[in-house]
Length: 110
Image 1: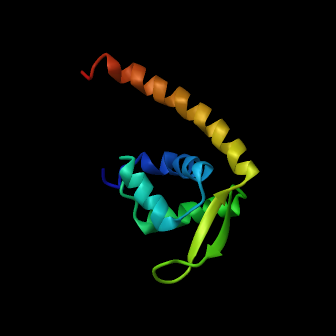
Image 2: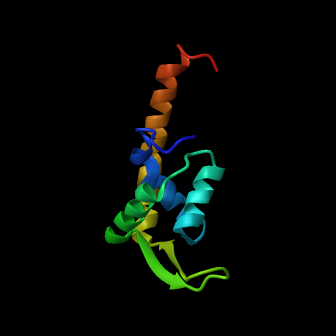
């Protein structure tokens, strides 16, 4: 899936928070996980501003750690506020997804 899908920006923060709730990770690792999940190939120009936004909102906390290959990496972990936001956004996403599914299910064969 390509990253320039117009809806990507609408749910990228939710996806990042969900992955960080699972485990702390660095930018490239998060991008790989998004691609593996089939969400999108997210370019750095989209991913890193989203991570900075989460950091500035107090939803993710960065820390630096050495890398086995190359320079040290900036890891992000979810904060308590991030977990609360994740729970709220997940409920909103579920309602939205169910509504879209209902609208298209009658006209688009599965």
